[in-house]
Image 1 (cartoon, rainbow, N blue to C red):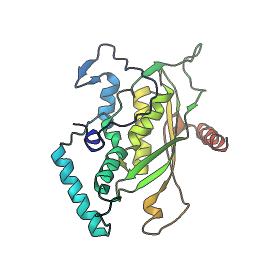
Image 2: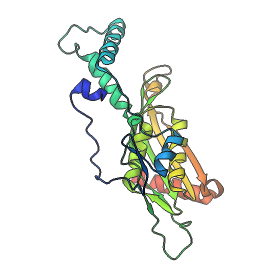
Image 3: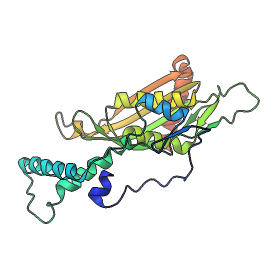
Length: 249
């Protein structure tokens, strides 16, 4: 049973990006998720679909636990506006972590558009900034920011919308920013076999803003480089310059 359907009576409002299908080329269907080469890669990287099945009895028990916790923290749950707060909070947490559910439209790779050359080594593709929100696994508080993935293509490219889908898939889970950055780079590299992959993420962490040092206005920036980006400092400079140009636009 879909947990959000049980809580809200409807499914998530998905992004509505194209209704394209996965190219399988004879892949074996498995539980609604086609086990193509790319889906197997996602499994190995830990970002394959893994639907969560929560029964009504479980959801009622979790709501009762949340009611006890919220009440102990001081929230009066006996008002018209707060009686449903435990249910709404649980639904919000399930939606904020729906990256665990996977995205069957994610895996669609195409041949590169390089013609007359052996590779695309002089061409970058950078998408972003792609806005995201994730939950810090240390405090379960949000961190919100932008991701900019880039690559130097080899034989395959991901559709542009797939980069946005990939960012959403990886970020809508419990995470730390450093690991999230490398997970994006590893996934793009494995799916495309690119000459190089670069990922830049900038985010504000509410665990810094609302607790502890309560620092306002600071942002955490992380990068990950693979392949030719590791070897060529000029390529890294161009990547960062293009990101800054996009921020100013």
